[in-house]
Image 1 (tube, rainbow, N blue to C red):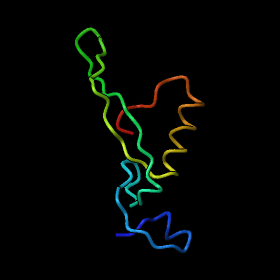
Image 2 (tube, rainbow, N blue to C red):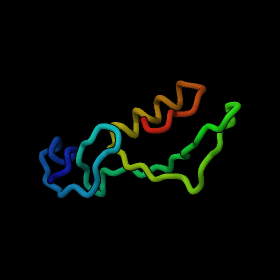
Image 3 (cartoon, rainbow, N blue to C red):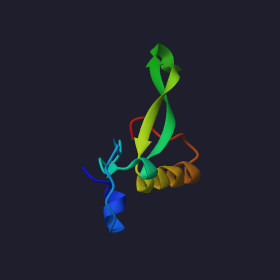
Image 4 (cartoon, rainbow, N blue to C red):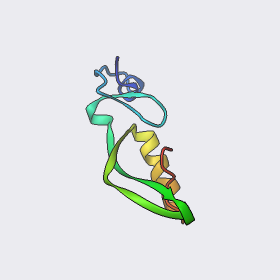
Length: 81
């Protein structure tokens, strides 16, 4: 499998990850790794953050979209999105 971003630039690089949001294959140079806090809700709406945070791998496009979303919205980025 080859990197989607490299193919768009008329290059060929082997993919080393899959974007967890859109599913695009990306090479090491185009992979964006972020930390994501996972939470669970207990009775009486008590939210508990699980440690350690999870790792999420994204393509550059989804990483920029996630950053734009978190910048414009006052709420935290929803888990699993």
